[in-house]
Image 1 (cartoon, one colour):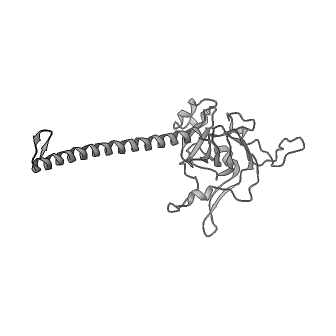
Image 2: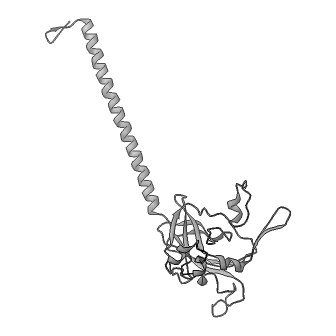
Image 3: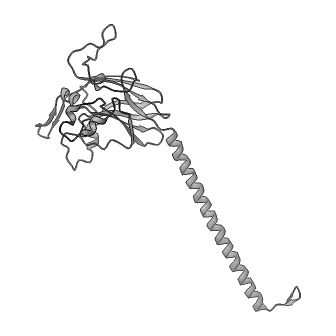
Length: 260
């Protein structure tokens, strides 16, 4: 067989065909590899874009005073003692009951869901159950919260009191107000922390809390991903896998005023 003036035998043609086939297979493999890399790059790009989109629509819920200012004095929100029924002048009247009276403001650009808050002591232990503020809080909106602080009584299965904390003790030991919430779009959980701010030499007198003396009068709000890892001060069975739900809502006897 003569091709372009060359006498090509059948065996030579077979070899050339094999070489061409091998080269074609190599190029196909290289193209497939680059196609796979391009597909992975596009996938990573889409994932990154979605993450940036979720971050851009992240809610930021912050506890504030009833005038929507930063909390510098816990006495502004944990007392003075107010009743839950306003007078004709729309001014709460004192009746000796410890109360929580604050606002939760969504300063982010995305709506928040399951908005609640609780109070921790200086050892970062929960000393209240969760106060549910709003099921959904749109960006820029304010949820007003007014509630008596209920006594924290924990009983065992036999009805025996195993732990008790009166409401007045909560106002004394309160050191952090922690607001937990979730993004309605991504489902990611976050929490913000408002700390007691003014100098208190008594808390530093034991030598273990010297950092307390260096805190600013109004500490900045701290924003953290996830839920607050603080454990409750009351005893919780270590094998109780559902224990987070045990302090999600207050007893139905708790009085509460909530407007969004």
